[in-house]
Length: 343
Image (cartoon, rainbow, N blue to C red; front, side, top):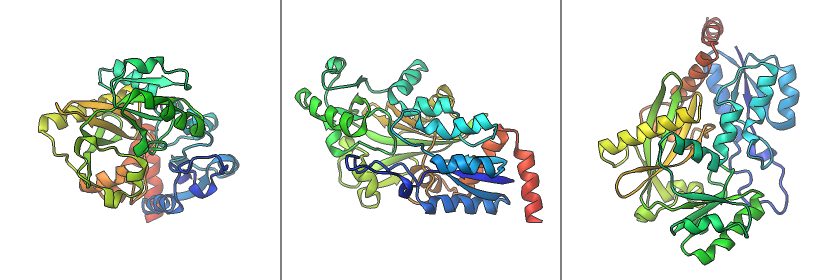
């Protein structure tokens, strides 16, 4: 089977002098794309490099791929940018891995995702959406400290150590630091002292939890720890990962159930990573869902937790591809192609 790889590279991102220094943070490296291509070859498929943006549009019309393994983040600052490649693929009738355009757009818009998740019965920290420095009325009911972050970003873009606001009078400055550089509203969210936990999920009917992983600070910050961009960029010295987390079994079970509820409520497909804060009473609070999680073999959380749970990188990628092909009813075709390629 010819499997196209859709992706956006950091090196291809256009930058302006006014862009924040993390503008390309969520984009991928050639090493990640090559690792995925290697896995496709190992499984007997022919990988086709499609790229992203205009290059993707040119390549997808001429490549005659059977299926697309999609990790493209999209272009611009639009809340629907992660849906760009899947929209094109659906228009062309080409099956692909991962969630559909509606889910990708919904999950990137953190406030809308929270509304859906709350409706499904999963708790999330109290929050409000702020569109400008004069739009702070909704923040009046929040308890401090709060976290101020971009409303439509991933990979911790815009989430720094300075994103925590301890006093109400500091809020306008923190909001301006998001709205200007990131050209989008700010999400103001109550800070939950406690543990940072993320859950990896693969599959569909039913989805399968890979692992629950706790992000543990090395600096002794305890419940005040924030998994910020500074920490992620220096993760080897800043944190270690504990899988399973140092939590009571019944708490881990609640986290797993909450993650599955979120996955299904947001109608994620094939894979996702769900982030939570766990408070002092061991209650999980939903932070955000990433239906397009990073798949770098080294620094990405999903491969890290899979490794800690005893999976190889090859097993992880094969499981995601298997789930997507099965959902698209292409598994038999894919196995036949793989068999012929290996004989």
